[in-house]
Image 1: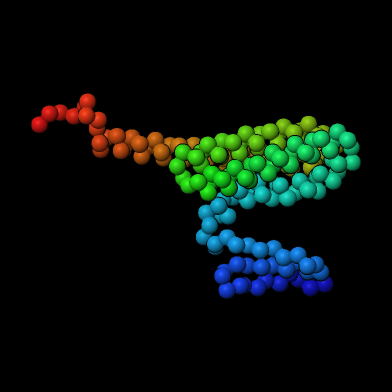
Image 2: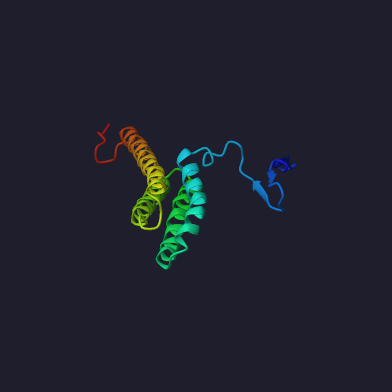
Length: 169
């Protein structure tokens, strides 16, 4: 069995071929992409991937199949909202999309806890622990961005007082 090989194309895309398959993983992100280096995003993306194995277990029961449908949407939405927030820049929309992602993480956390009849306690605890980390990281991110925005707004207001507070010359 050969190990995955990596080739670099002229346009800086990295292509990794999976051994024994015709599948390739294409990474088109730039090496300095802030999103790819955001640890919470990496956790959310990995959790989504990990859920594929969980869904095989849940899918054996008709009730589990219904939970899988909802869980796959909420887990995907965590990463998708982080992506969208980063894609729209660091204005008002990043905190808003981060809040939505945090809500989806809380929803996913609760659903994992409700899967206690179908998933092992160890697996549930592992997934809940990752989601707790994601929720905490998103909360810290939101608080940091909003406090920076408030400081900038406050500094801007003190440099440019409104006409009502200006003193006549």
